[in-house]
Length: 229
Image 1 (cartoon, rainbow, N blue to C red):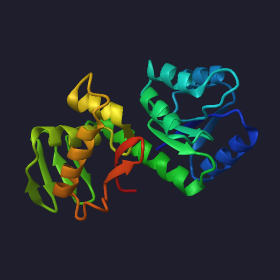
Image 2 (cartoon, helix red, strand yellow):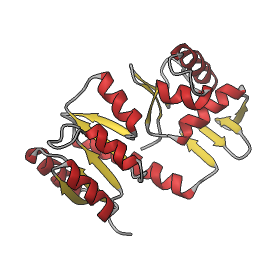
Image 3 (cartoon, one colour):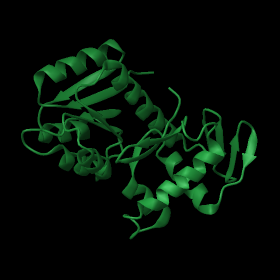
Image 4 (cartoon, one colour):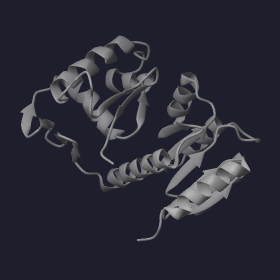
């Protein structure tokens, strides 16, 4: 099997060198762009397995690049940015990014996020009707949920929330995205719904609801269904 190709769209030379060294050492092929225009062109020409995108590019904001790539590509995209505000993370994720890393970050965390994104993309291509993570097993075809081998009854809304998190497993999903997918348009500000139903899901699925193992909160941003490394 060929090595996965990662496209780096980053204008800072030192960061590109750091990423190139980290990725090639760990078995990835690397393509580099230092402008948004070239990055979009490289994405179209090279069809990479994953994109690492900086937001602060000289010719175009990375949010616009994300939106343009999402018009025709579902390639996993991880934002790497010095912008660490919640608003910046939410904007990037709402624009279509799969994940967000704030600079500076460690090699270990970067590689782990890349593995998760690639694995989730592969699972989506296979179209599996079964999802397993930690002690949770969900048969999506039969709409059955099991924890440690025992079937758990979920209400229709609880199941829809869980199924939506599974569809985006490993990714941070913003409050707005979840509300739109589960409750429909016009519910984007009703975050109390999410708090209540996530609490109910945790009590039914987690061993210790106050210290969740896989139904994770991303403070101020949204939620993420954690998958094993």
